[in-house]
Structure formats: structure tokens, C-alpha cells
Amino acid sequence: MSGIPACPEELAPCESVQDVCWLEQREVNVPAGDDWLSAQEATSLARLRFPKRHADWRLGRWTAKQAIATCFNLSSDHRALAAIEIRAAASGSPEVFLSGELAPVGISLSHSSGVALCALASRPRKAGEASLGCDVEAVEPRSDNFVGDYFTASEQKVIQQTPAENRPPLVTVLWSAKESALKALQEGLRLDTRSVEINLGTAFPTNRKCSGSSCLVLPRTSADSWRPLQVRYQGSSAFHGWWQHDDQLARTIVSRPPSRPPAHVSVIGTSEHPNLQLTIPAIMIPAIRS
Ligand SMILES: CC(C)(COP(=O)(O)OP(=O)(O)OC[C@H]1O[C@@H](n2cnc3c(N)ncnc32)[C@H](O)[C@@H]1OP(=O)(O)O)[C@@H](O)C(=O)NCCC(=O)NCCS
Image 1 (cartoon, helix red, strand yellow):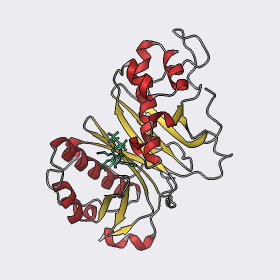
Image 2 (tube, helix red, strand yellow; image 1 turned 120 degrees about the vertical axis):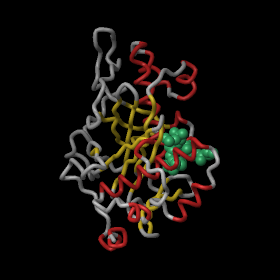
Image 3 (cartoon, rainbow, N blue to C red; image 1 turned 180 degrees about the horizontal axis):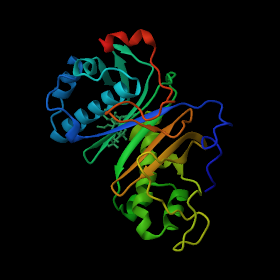
């Protein structure tokens, strides 16, 4: 595998770059009541009969609404959150509605092991054009059969050249990046997972346990430390993105146009990134500030 191209690590060559922010929440953060859901969302929730799906859906909606309120500097009281709706498009991909109007906000959602991740971008999505995908996955060993069935030959080669103890995080990051890419394409697992190929580059070359230039040793990364990745689809570069993992979770976010490293926001206070450029047309805001 070749290294990651200069963009977006060195942003100058990029024609356009967008800001992406992300927020994570856990089940313990979700209020017991449902007064932060819209009437339509409450109806959708009532249709979900399986407890896990019910809990995941609430956690995802809560995380998305908190992310929107924080990233766009809106009120996060429950009445205001109820005016922010996350509806599923026909593909299953989420869309943001503010006071009933489709908002020019790119959004992607993921839940795993009682954690939900939401990524947002303010760039409007043009019809039929992929834009943003995110995924969070529990870091755990996956079988050789899993790797053989779902990864490309090139990805399998990188995995085989990696020491066994480093494979769980590597395979999890690669898998997560595939899911992010399949969400950004708005197709999910309707597409063959081998139709997207992930390149983590050669930024993490051989250590004492590896030989060979493409051997990857993934460093642990902190919540705000992202490393670049690239996604190829149908023979050409489709998305740039970012990955990170700790002992428990791997996270990936991919987008087109490329983004700067995603900005972590916290529901306590506002973004720690004062230069974050995320905006919603002013005309949409009064209704959700009242
Ligand atoms: C997208 C997909 C790969 C995610 O699966 P997953 O890894 O198990 O779940 P994650 O928690 O990471 O992501 C789930 C979120 O992805 C989003 N999503 C679902 N379908 C999506 C699509 N086609 N494009 C982009 N995002 C999608 C949703 O927001 C969903 O959460 P929500 O339903 O609570 O709103 C999977 O749902 C899929 O392939 N969906 C499309 C195919 C489909 O609908 N099959 C029928 C299922 S019964």
C-alpha cells in the first residue's frame, strides 16, 4: 500500500476542506424521559420492539441532538432538543430537520457497546453525492475467516504482515473505516465490504517485531488525536478520513470533501475548537433557540 497523499494532512493542495465535529455519549448520559424527542420520533421509537434496538436508537438520537446543539451553539434544553429531529432517509441514512425543515447539515451516527458517536459537517449534501460517514467499534479479536471474507487482498496482506498481538486494533480500525465509507456512500452493507479499500498509509512503519515496509504498528491515540486514512472505491480515491483507537474502541470518520482532523466537542460548555467553522442558516435558528 502506498502512503496517504498529502491532502488532507497538508491542506494546501486541497480544493476545499470542511470542518467536522464529533461527540460521543454513553447510555448513562441519556435521560429517562422522552420529552427531548419530537412527536414523530416518539412514534418511531414506539415501533422498536427489541430492547437493544430501542436503547441504541435513543442513545443515537440523544447523541445527535446534543452534538447539533453543541456544534452549532444552539440551546440544549429538552424543548429545544425536541425541535431538532433526526429522520431516516429511504436508504436508512440519517438527516437533520430543524423545526420540520431539512437542514444543510451532514450527519452520521454509530453505536457500539453502549456508546454512540455522532459526526457533523455543515456542508450541504448535494443530491446523490456522498459526504460523511462515522463508525465506532469495540476493539476485539476477529477470526481469520472474517478477515478472508470481508477484506481485500491488499488489506489482508497488511494484516498478515502485522504481529498477532497488534491485529485486533488494526482489523477493528480497518473494519470501522469500511463501515464509515459504506455509510458515506449511503449504501451500508448493501455493498460488498471489499468494494471499499482502506489505506492507513505507512505512517506507522516497522518496529522491532516487524519486518517489511508495509507492516503497521498502530499507536494508541487519545480522544482528540486522529490519524489520516484514505478510502478507494471503484478504483479511485473516494474519501479521506481519520482514525483513532484506545484499548476499548476504534473510531473512524470519512468525508468528501476532506476534513481537517475532526474536532471533539463536549456537552459541558462549547467546542474546545474556537476556529470550528460550522454554521446553520440564521433563518433556521430562532425556532430552536426559543
Ligand atoms: C449502515 C450499516 C452498515 C450500519 O450498521 P451497524 O454497524 O450495525 O450500526 P452502527 O451503529 O454503526 O450504525 C447505525 C446507524 O447507521 C445509520 N445508517 C443506517 N443505514 C445507513 C445508510 N444506508 N447510509 C448511511 N447511514 C446509515 C443510521 O443512523 C443507523 O443508526 P439508527 O438506525 O439508530 O439511526 C447497516 O445498518 C446497513 O448496512 N444498513 C443498510 C442496509 C439495510 O438497511 N439493511 C436492512 C437492515 S434490516
